[in-house]
Length: 242
Image (cartoon, rainbow, N blue to C red; front, side, top):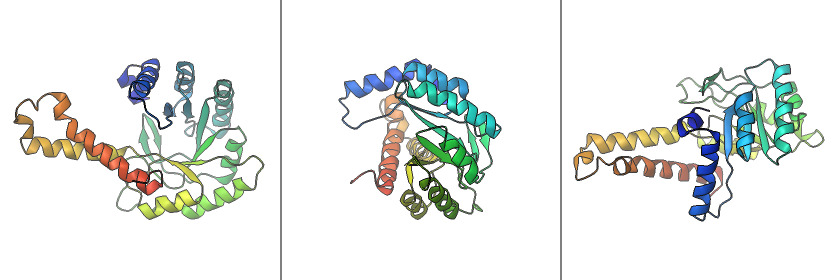
């Protein structure tokens, strides 16, 4: 929601993404996805033509979370828009929604699946932002219990989403993917890469050369660093052959 406000609103974002996709002739399928949206934001994204929304009601009482998720699912599915929802809040802070890194109760996950969502984000000890030194790692045993339980249900083939993917060891990421995680969210890792590249550029006085004060040139090393960082992540996730 913070990025959308920064970029000028839901309709602006939808137009920017679609127009760039068309102008550059992108051949890789894309989604215009709202991450960690509240009830109002999810409805606004649906209205603006996003192709995917995450309604994050994990900070609400479970009954209210489920009720609002059902409403969002009904609105979204009318327009062939996919819905992601969350149980067991993810630790850290994301656009004002604060979670403590809970382990999602299996019964709560089952109830959420029954709302007919398309993706589920379930807390397994993961957090947003930098992981502290004393972090205990992903609770892969709990993820296994979740997937085993949900796989035994009718119409249970709902992919898992791992939030807070930045800084999780590669072996844990790969193990989680092998257990049913189909989408891994990374952001902090890219931001840190951008920051370090920009800092190096300025501290070595390269910004003082020629017209490197031009924002397009000043920020270019950061953009390249983000591209490199995400290419490495895609390789780890098994989403790239490069």
